[in-house]
Amino acid sequence: MPTKSRHPETVVLHAGYRSDPTTNAVAVPIYQTTSFQFASPDHAANLFALKELGNIYTRIMNPTHAVLEERIAQLEGGVAALALGSGQAASLFAVQNICQAGDNFVASTDLYGGTWNLFAHTMRQMGIECRFVDPSDPENFRRATDARTRCYYAETLPNPKLHVFPIAEVARIGRELGVPLIMDNTAAPILCRPLDLGAAIVMHSTTKWIGGHGTSIGGVVVDGGNFDWEAHAARHPLLNTPDPSYHGAIWTQAVKPLGPIAYIIKMRVTLLRDIGAAMSPFNAFMFIQGLETLPLRLRQHCANAALVAQHLAHHPKVARVIYPGLMDGALRLRADAALKGGYGSLVGAELVGGREAGRKFIEKLEMFYHVANIGDARSLAIHPATTTHSQLSAEEQAKTGVTDGYVRLSIGLEHPDDIIADLDQALAAI
Ligand code: PLP
Image 1 (cartoon, rainbow, N blue to C red):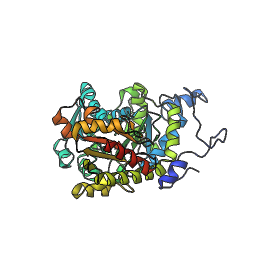
Image 2 (tube, rainbow, N blue to C red):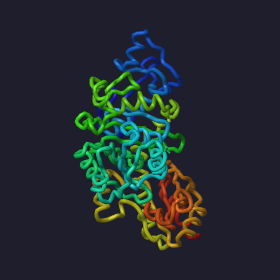
Image 3 (cartoon, protein in one colour):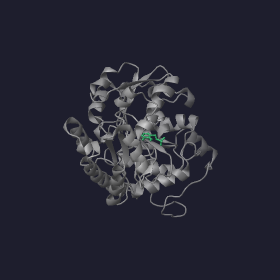
């Protein structure tokens, strides 16, 4: 029996799968197949008509993906999920599923740079306007909303600022106006459950902590099943009017007998069908492996990051440490309200010597990897001002929280003494 537990440690090992129905294999098999044979012409017709749910073609669904999807959905407290080829695909699909040309959505300015580009440029070319607002005042989301606003979008724990997003406050405003909040929870799996705080949809780049070993690119979107799309039919025509691409299906009606999964089913059978940003079964297997130890790894990631943050806070060559556990006032209250069990494993350090110190520090690190990734088992570092944020003007950099001396650390699972020793020797050399 797959588990009904709410404990993440159990969910990641038991949700959605007990053993393979034909071979009794305990590990989730990699169903490396494009297609699934239909039992009969009627069976085939029923699957295509969504009268029955079942496997058709791996671009749209696959039994290996299904286990990953169910585990992440249960972990987040949602009703269903969809695995995709990357976090970028998940961000795009999460919004595009309910937005079309002429519509707009409101997003926090504190976003991963790739998401920013996608929203500011590529989606604009598609006729969808992203209105960026400062999240420090949740009311900014209400102010930017009009009749064509379809959703809000933000990250739980956005770097480089690491200011935890006011999830409950913005979700409440959205629910008053019929606007669902989509949360990118990539940097805070398990630590935060945005759906419990009122968000409607959660996405992850599984590339990061869920995969956990820096091996595979992937993404997932989770449907909270907690948003009443029909009650706001005028705001959500894509879910409440006939879809000509699926013989006139009205998604909120068509899948009602299957549960409150209109949003995620539509994404699977229209966007994924048409755009094809599918995850490979092999990568789904890798994410299932990663997921199995995620609660355990995350505890160590958080413990190591807390030690690093404390250590750097007392280092003479560090002007400022950016870490939710060291913030105070409203920012700390927000972090404590949203995060349970740790403050994540990202730590920012502003070095005394500015740009040159930042560059040199990265060069002098010996154990840390110098990469653009985060959430690997290994410790990682980057100097945003000369890399990820180098195309931005000085003013834009400052707005995103990147100063000349800022270095971003993603703290790994090595022994904390070794992590701190590597940081110390690099700081000594600048
Ligand atoms: N969201 C966040 C917070 C990220 O850090 C990233 C990647 O760095 C993405 C989304 C995009 O994910 P991917 O690289 O899997 O496409």
